[in-house]
Length: 95
Image 1: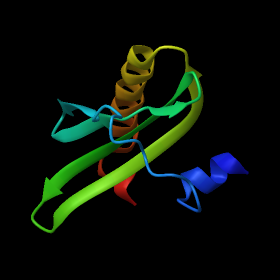
Image 2 (image 1 turned 30 degrees about the horizontal axis):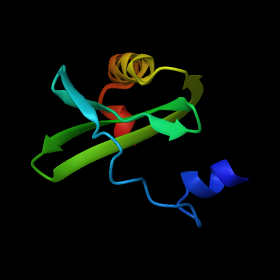
Image 3 (image 1 turned 180 degrees about the horizontal axis):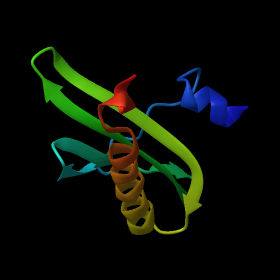
Image 4 (image 1 turned 120 degrees about the vertical axis):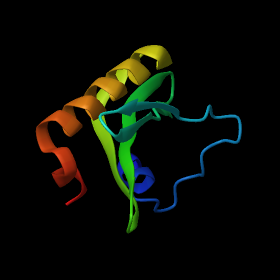
């Protein structure tokens, strides 16, 4: 239940100020941001896919069940997941 509270922002504490900023990468006209979430001694795979349009910014955030002992691995897999979303869904990722 605690995970769901944090996921939906219900009573969860805000991210610490010393939490590293998301790393970004451009991919086929989209910006993929890898922003793993610290959960104890592990990192949960999380990130977003976004793009700027004439109507403003569109963004799709994702959080997956995968956890990693190393933050660098979580970042690497977040980029892979973001690229897969773009490849498989294209602009439908924002629906």
